[in-house]
Structures are given as C-alpha cells and as structure tokens.
Image 1 (cartoon, rainbow, N blue to C red):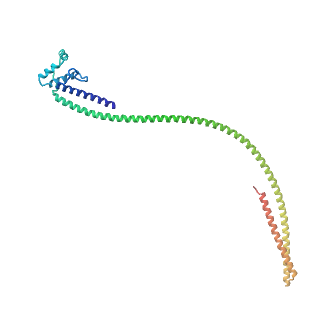
Image 2: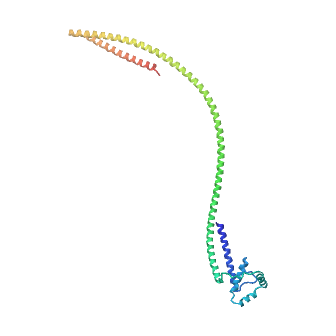
Image 3: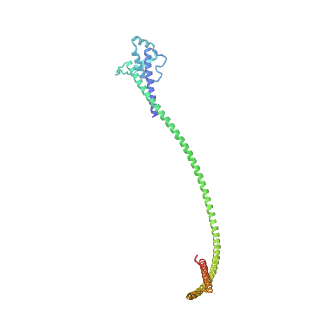
Length: 307
C-alpha cells in the first residue's frame, strides 16, 4: 500500500510540473520574455503540446504588428523547420470542439492544480500514515527479531542443559549398577552371617530349653515333696483337730461336772486356763501351717504353670 501511494504521489507531482511548465510557457509568450537561444521548456514536453502552446501564445497577441514582430524574432532555422514540417504532410483542419479561451483553460488548470494539491495532501497524509505503519511494523519486526534471538539463546541453553542432564543420567545409571552389585554382595554376606547367627541362636535356645527342663523337673520334685509334706501336715492337723475335739469334749464334760457340783477349785481353774492356752496355741499353729502350705502351693503353681 505504501508503494502504491508513493507512485500515485509521484505521478501527481509530475502532472503538476507539466501544468505549471505549460502555464509559464504561455505567460512567457504573452510577455515576450522567452530567450530565443534557450529551449521552450525544461522538461521533455510532447511536440503536440508545444504546438498547442504556440497557438495559444499567438492568439494572445493583440494585432498583426505584434505577430510580425514576434515572427521577425524567430530564428531562420526554427521557422524553416516548422514550415517544412507543416507543408510535408496533411494537416488536421478541423477545429477543436473545445472553444475555450486561454483564460478559461488557465482557470480550469488552476482548478485541476488545486484538486491535485488536495490529492497530494491526501496522498501525503496516507504516505505519512503508511510510514507510521511501516515504522510500527519495523519496530514489531525488530522486537520479534530480538525475541527470536532470545528464544534461540534459550533453546541453546535448553540443549546444553539437556546434554548435561543426559550425562548426569548416564553417571547415575552407572552408580546405580555399582550399588546394585554392592547390594547383592552385601546381601550374600548378610545371609551368611544370618545363618551363623541363627545357628548360634538355635544352640542357645536349645541350651536354655535344657536348663528350663531341668529346672521344671527340679520344681516338679519340690512340688511332690511339698505335696507329701502337705498331706502329712493335713493328717497331723486332722489328728490334732481330733485331739482338740476330744480335749474340748473332756473340758466340757469336766465343766458340766463342776457346774453340777457347784464348787470350783483353783486347780481346776488353772487346768482350764492351761487347756485354753493349749487350744489357742493349736489353733494358731494350724492357721500358720495352713498359710505356709498355701504360699508353697501358689509358688509351685506359678513356677510349673503354662508359659
């Protein structure tokens, strides 16, 4: 779009230059200011346009005197060339349908000039806008270029990091293989040590079982002895209880006899007291013996009970 606008602006400027050059040529003819030794126009105007401008300049001359004066100032070579050129071929004698005067044409050209100036202004604004867009695009392009460079650097860093990670991965795999081999060796050694420890533990347990078995047998023997003693004690207690019952019966019989007589001697009283002390001692002895037997039985049950 910027290129098209530039071309349009260039064409409009060239058209304005042509119009201005034509107007200056006409004014020069009317005022007699042309230098006969210099070219009519600076630019390469077409021959027909120059001929038309010559006609307009001649029409601006007021009388024949001015035209003759102008003709006398024309170089011979120029007059001869124009005469030969007009006489050699047929000339289009039809008049132009446009009978506008020079002033009308000049006014029209001025209007065209103003229109072209307006077009040039619009095109200039468009060119400036397109220039702004181009600058924005160039800035965006430069920004994207910097981003591309940054991305390439990041990619390079990523590649280096990935290469480093691959190297570390290989090193870790080697280390893992070494540790696996070392672990297998340690497991074999540990299994060998475990077998020896288990063998020693088994022997120690067997020895402990033998000791416990002998201790249990010893306790069983003591239990049997205590049971025999308990039976003997129970028999003795039964005898003592029987004797005590007999003594109690005798004491009651004596007491009944004494009560029936109504007299109590001091000797009988002392005898009763002695019997009472004997009875109390027997009861205490029986209770202590029973408590001792119970303690021995509890101890034997705890020692020989299930573990």
